[in-house]
Amino acid sequence: MNGYSLAYVALVVDNVDSVATIFTRDLGLRRVDCSVGDDRRVPVFGVGASAIALFEPGDPFLGGPVKPGVHHIALAAEDPEAAARSHDIAVLDDGRREGVEGAWQVELDPAGTSGVRTRFSEPLSIETSEPGPVQRIDHIGIASADNDSAIETFSRQFGCPVESRQTDLEVRTTIESFTSDKYGAVYHNGPSEVVGGLRVAFVTTGDCDLEFLQNFDPDNEGQTGNGRPGSTKQDQSAIARFIARRGPGLHHIALKTANIDGALASLHAAGHRVIDAAGRPGSRRALIGFIHPSALGGVLVHFVQREGP
Image (tube, rainbow, N blue to C red; front, top):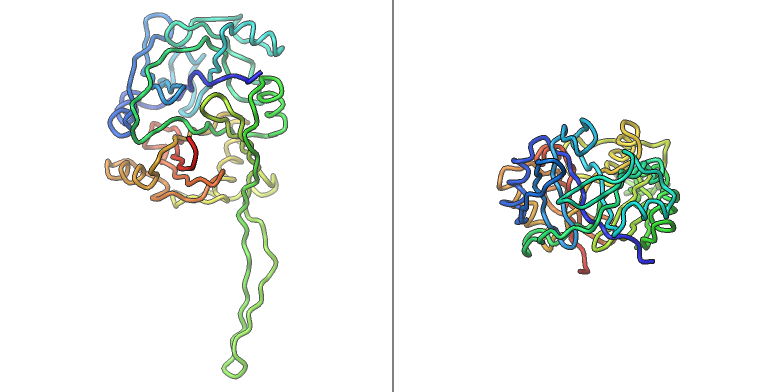
């Protein structure tokens, strides 16, 4: 079994129309308004082989009022109910219901998916966007309490391959100097100290990945940067704080681009707040750069530039 592909990811934003405009005007994504049950429609953007759907916080499709952020992922399955049964995961809301563009779907109990809000959906046929600043979804970031448990579900049970694993560390080394007008200077390197870190695992779902991020040291929560350019220490803090407040679950979405510095500069020039003015080192030998959540209705988004398709 080759696992499941991502059908779509649902983002909850404070102002759907405003964020949809940024997606089309500044990111070059094609908008298609799709039904989501009853007579309501939401903007959906085909990105690579999957899609992004935007929802208001109070949309009934989400099951009740929720905070802005990445709400759920939908994995494509020809028979969503049969897929859920085959993995022995409980289904919420008494079975299947009509989803995006009339595709039937089931919502899985997050207790069976390591806290990740997950649905099985019939495959969608959303027209993909033309090549532009955004090539595809690179990955969906997940604040993880236990990467081994997440891999057990999404890889061993669902059959989605593990793309890679790595450990991200920020290390501080103290240098002492002893400078004399007679004896010159002597330098002494102190022991290195890990000040921040994450255990990372990537699991492939079609043309994008799920990125599970687990705190390297639960006794060290790191610190936030208050809008300054990011670091591994700050990334660790963001994951630790998210889990403390909300529990494990979907955290951010990353968009692949061929020119990260250009993409960040373009958004900044358009008046949108960015956290990183230029790409910085990230997982998988990539450059990453974050957009401030206030620019995209409360959702944390970052660009990724790396080798490969």
